[in-house]
View (cartoon, rainbow, N blue to C red):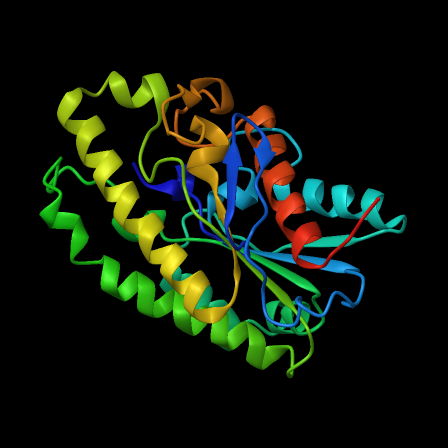
Length: 264
């Protein structure tokens, strides 16, 4: 199933934000410029990606504005959120935005934090490939290459100014929880392996680029990936519900606050 009509692409900059238990984040790795401890306070967040940051099938406030609200509470002043994510987007779609969409280029150029979550639609489930893992994995090197270019483009658009880039991964690139289980054991096994590979690519880009990384599978399924995440999913089994978006915002805000050394 594609995260477009039912899909999601988002670019966020999260580094090492693996959650322990359900909702408590361990300290992420630092992004460039954060080690000095004297970073500028964030005033604006821009979200890029697919239907997950967009808030598809939730009828709720999606995580980008929730993250901004959390950071605003932490620093005691308003943090704005601009959600430029588009349901159905792939990494190619985000690249086109950053190269050709003047409004997105302007938003990113003035951002303090850029959240990016995208890649699931690059390996969306198809009837022709079914549960054949090898039919999807050929796309992953291009996903990693595109993400690398996306992060570089974000830094280029900010003109060398300090920006925190957060890269978020996925609890599942296909259906999750009981919805995946209903599709059968082969579906579940392929979804898990493909999610492993996409998330590894996202984490690799975060590490290489000095971006913040947030492990949303840990946020939804616990540190051992053993919990059933169904209660964080909307009724399509593909997108987060309100509780899921709250969980993502908690993880993201904690990672950004740690990176920028923000305290309440």
